[in-house]
Length: 354
Ligand code: DAH
Image (cartoon, rainbow, N blue to C red; front, top):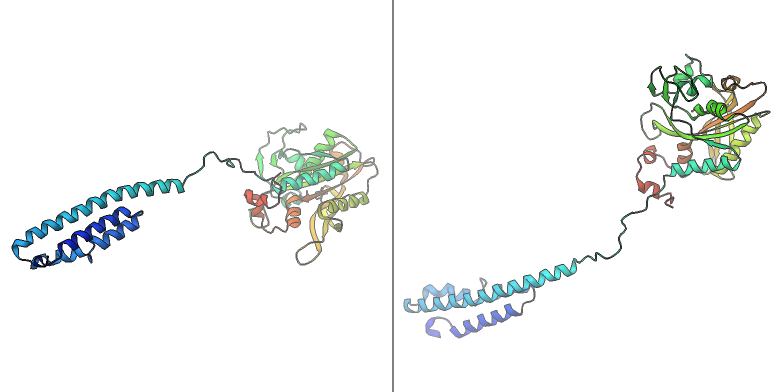
């Protein structure tokens, strides 16, 4: 109707078309699009509204009422459809995010054995295969077993070679009944030598694996708690060649057929002669080479005497190796932290979960 300044039918039809578009919309996005198109600021109804002021006064009211009615109609349709779409979209979300609570879950992920425990067992297996007994010994032990019985004199400087955690004063009575000896966290598995001789008697072929303690700070190459394997053989007629043969056999068992050992003269209070033992390690980074692995020697007569044995009758050999050192070498690990932190992902790399 030209006299109203706008085409009323066109406007009504457009709004009805808009209502259809609203009803046909199947997503919030389409619904918003329909609103923009039909009642947004560029829509026909917005333009008409804009021109209301220029209409003659008598037509203005009627046109205003029509606009209000059409907007309200559109608004109702929009509101109703919007509720429906919200419900549909909610359903859709629930379907998409559905969790099948009946599916089996892995509630107990498999752990993995620590490579150190595994290596300790490998070492023990080696000794068992030769018919030796395995001993553990106490980690809190008397100073007597850790030092005195092993021929460390009371003020022997060698006591300072190992920085010791002292646990208890002078009232302790240790397993062998020695009174008045301080208790210590054992600094070496050698502490089990004389206990083994006293309790098990001779001939003795014994390996002792376990934790030892020294007052070191934890860093890439040190830890205050580490593991050693001690070997002690006491019998009639044992010589250094028995020692060397045993060391080479252990090296082969741990590091493969090419591995072998060499001895360098050294000093330990509990062996005479004493030697440092180096290992020929075939797979070292940057090629094969010698690596220090432990100490060894023929059991000192005073150690045999500590156990009540006659050194003229019995001889023996002993050696001690570091288990961490063997593990670092065997698996090319270069930070001690990895060994002590207990992260299961570290252990899993060694595929020892079973
Ligand atoms: N107990 C020594 C240490 O912890 C290692 C050792 C050296 C053990 C010589 C032995 C040995 O049995 O004969 O450094």
